Image (tube, rainbow, N blue to C red; front, side, top):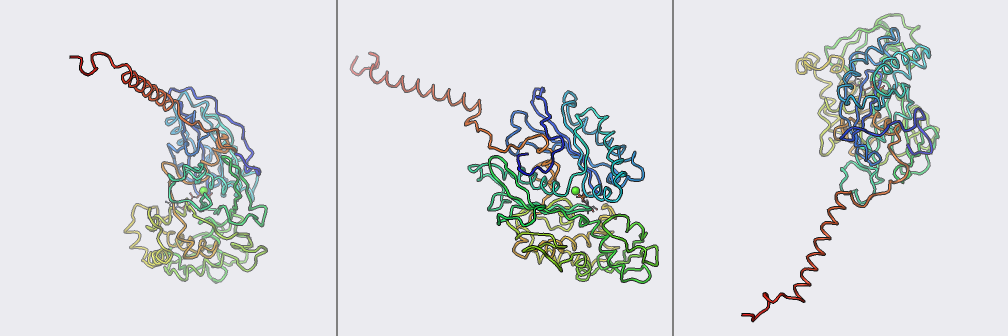
Amino acid sequence: MAQTKKVGDHCSKPTLPLCRSSKCVKYGIVLDAGSSHTNLYVYEWPAEKENDTGVVHQVEVCKVEGLGISGYSQDTEKAGLSLQHCMKRAQEVVPEQQHRETPVYLGATAGMRLLSLQNRSMADRVLSAVEKTLRSSPFNFQGARVISGQEEGAYGWITINYLLGNFKQPGWLNFLPHLRSSRGTSGALDLGGASTQITFAPDQELIESQENSLHFRLYGKNYNVYTHSFLCYGKDQALRLKLATDLQSTQNGSLLDPCFHLGYLRIMNISDLYTNPCIANGEQQLPFTQLHLQGNGDYQRCRMTIQKIFNTSYCPYSSCAFNGIFLPPLQGEFGAFSAFYFVMNFLNLTTEKSPVPLDKATSAVESFCSRPWHEVKAEFPKIKEKYLSEYCFSGTYILSLLENGYGFTMEKWQNIQFLGKIGSSDAGWTLGYMLNLTNMIPAEKPPTRPLSHASYVGLMVFCSLVLVAVLLLSWLTFHKPKCLQKGLI
Ligand SMILES: Nc1ccn([C@@H]2O[C@H](COP(=O)(O)OP(=O)(O)OP(=O)(O)O)[C@@H](O)[C@H]2O)c(=O)n1
Ligand SMILES: [Ca+2]
């Protein structure tokens, strides 16, 4: 990718040999090894247009059964085995004659970032196990690695702006979808299980902290982009943070939790709550080993308990999100995807047309939280209990994060669009990652062919016909054959 600050230098050489199939289509595979699960994506694009924008699209997504790869730290072989089913699926999707030239990449996100912080050698063993499976496939294995939060934010931003056509040159702008800022790009909001990213092009030129600043040159244009990844503020880890905070004020391990529905019960081992670096110590001081959680479905109180996990008491910059992290004033439109979309879509808050206003979204979450668990369970029998039981917490967390964490006011909220897919492709970091590693986004605008070959031939034929017609007419005018002259008979 053309950028003065390279976000990923791993395997960045062009890897794709010339396409040999009759259709001249190329393929690329990316595995998104998230904290909660792994997805495999197959992308396709016409070989002769690979430097155009918006031509790469997703043709397959395969959801890996079981845990995210970091969940296999005690049984690392299983991390590799779990991927086999989706790798077979990819072999069916990509034509056999192109298997060897199709690159496959695996990027692991916050679950593996946390495991690396906790136990580096365990994380390396998990990566070796997945690498073994990927190497044994017929595809062109290009690496399995843990990507940084900064890369995750940057590639998510590139993906959505590429898919929305925002990197296209003026002249094409009339055809762009409405989700586009005045500066020509859309911000990206990604909520995972273990981390969350915010990335956008701010109005101000200066980004006050270096680690939040990216510079890209894409298709002949410069972009200064702000990004931050909040590790531990994905929705699963945020819930753990909240529970650990609430536990400090219980005496016996019983917790009346307003973020769960009335009648909902959950028993958790305290040791499971304290298994990663998000929740620093504290466990030793607790005189009980289990947490008995009992829901009482109260949105307002839930919001207050969530608020405690955002520290807004200090800010070493002109403005901050929370925990002393720099955040410039929000600018333009935003696309919110991953769990932002899953949760808001469940709550019917993702209309295609105009966004649901903030006060309406708040009322919807409030009324969902107030419903008793038995009623919710009866209405959605097909939804996984883990997801269903947490939608009240998740909806409230999303509102807190966006409103209090990032400062989306009633007005700015209208600029957020919750998106699952753009065209046939899922919104997420994987497409941007592949575009970068296959050098498919040029720094300079590729020389534009004024016309395609077919249009050129067509135009030539048309001009020739016009010329012949003009010549014929002139000849008829000046040399009328005798048979056409008046008064011959
Ligand atoms: N239909 C769905 C699917 C997922 N989830 C939740 O969404 C979160 C996971 O979102 P995802 O974007 O898949 O996260 P990961 O990629 O696994 O995590 P990370 O990016 O932090 O590594 C999980 O808490 C999961 O329970 C949900 O509520 N409803
Ligand atoms: Ca993710």
